[in-house]
Image (cartoon, rainbow, N blue to C red; front, side, top):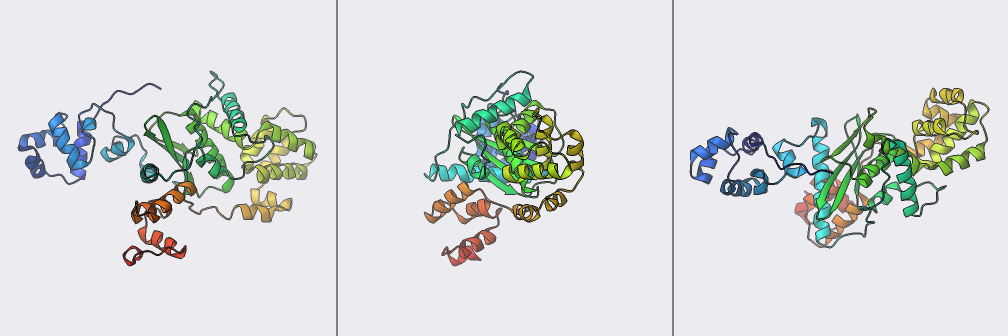
Length: 389
């Protein structure tokens, strides 16, 4: 990945000064001259080293960023309005950054869980074969994790968090399935992954596996936003292929085709599709794509797959007696779930009085301190009266 040159837009600095209510009189007092403040507010030039040091202390920004000697972090970029973040995802991205901050601070205090180091994991990078790359990488990862090629991944969240990621399910804009935000810590990169809790459960699993591909490939960009529309970008093609083969390997597909035999009618096809969906936790769309891509002679013909596709999923489930199972799997849809690993760490740190309630609230209650206090009290925590108000 090529390093980008260090640049900084003085106009962005001007906007930040205005946004933080830094008036010309404040700058005049800071610099001892009204001219310096006027020039910076008009965006006529970058600050000098001395000016940057004074501004850095005032605004809480690294002075080397203000002089253009260093690229701004994602947090600074968001404050300055220079990060390439679509307006509808600014709030969740800022939330992801709070999660990363909590993770970093609790880690520094010694609250950590050993994580698999996959920074040097051998992902497949064959030129012009992104689908094969995704499949090969999925096979390699399952082998590295010693996962049986026929077994479904039941607790995908814990598995991804065991690789050092922070995973949270929360409402996102309707057209956004997932967001991945990285933070560089020394020689490693740590990711916060947000999954849209309004998506149905199988799509949430597919999204999380998709985001894991971005993590493994260390895909470029300050943030990665996966929207509903189809993308022809190579990283997205790789991630989709990885997700399908990681959750539902070809060996598992062959096993189920042998179990069911070649479908002779729509009912047989529905039973096969439902078995795949409920066993491996993937969507009908992903299931049908896997069957269409299969060269196995036992795979259903296109005519039956097309008819299966035309029936509502809930109706299809009910038709083969799986309606109750489908409803049970869907119970958690729409619910917000905090990161299990980060929740454990931040609560341990809170118990030792090294982090405050606001940080706990960022992790377990979307920043709502009253709700966080309610949850802790309900769980048996003895909080100071001030914290419960």
